[in-house]
Length: 348
Ligand code: NAD
Ligand code: ZN
Ligand code: ZN
Image (cartoon, rainbow, N blue to C red):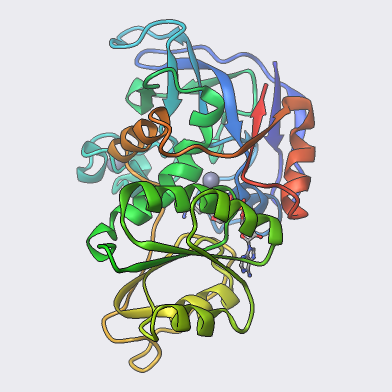
């Protein structure tokens, strides 16, 4: 079969022939129905120095995956051949306190995981191929209610990651509050919908691209703000001078982190999800009192079940553009050029 593989750091991926994987004990092979194109893959291709991560190429890209069970290894109950499933992407050890409750992204025994801190498409072979090996069926979630794998695939990361970030801030998103989403690409346009579907907060979306702000409006944003030097003042003005109760920075550049710090309210949350490499100085007078700053990585298996439920009920629906596997390199180029709206999904 053909697979889109990252063969070396700081290089474009290549379409190459690889053997079809086979399921061993406890494992499953999935026929891919959709594999999302995430900006993190562009960081892998362009930004990360060798040694930054505990794993590296070569591997098949694609860490947002859904499709159908193709083969089940010995000792795997609960699934049937042909059943539509989503893959929970972070693969931890399965037995530490975090993995036991489905928080594989924060696995505390990474040496015992299939790959430390990664998963399929992040160190091990992912879904940008016709078939993908999943090393343990516990990473599979049955798709609810006829949900299309092309929509389910982005929900496993572009949905799950902002879902986790929003969910942990639910207590700060009561009626009368404001949430700001910085960066309305793959993650951000789903994040806006998640905020609207699960909270009563007013949602302000910020992006540098006109098309992204139009999509934010379509997704239910109450207000859109063009990124730039005036954005923080506009958010403060729009919130009666108080600032935003929750800011999700889905870019993570110096400029967006500074914007988040300038726009967040006392007692608010500034959550850094984007990996653009910026830094935020944290000091006594640098942030409003009791504003908390955190990074988040992906989400739990339980949260994936919840976000797929939102998808199956039509409360959250990714805007997708599909590309065949032969056009996957082109899809990444379109993302790098800022020409994608919503999420690109590879359909092998
Ligand atoms: P994307 O390319 O689809 O969207 C990024 C959006 O940010 C675009 O709309 C772009 O116009 C906008 N943007 C870029 N610079 C901006 C700026 N200075 N001000 C305002 N808007 C700006 O990317 P994506 O796939 O949604 O990923 C977003 C980020 O999140 C990436 O850095 C990615 O690596 C990271 N990510 C993190 C996690 C995690 O678990 N922490 C998971 C997935 C992705
Ligand atoms: Zn991703
Ligand atoms: Zn673990």
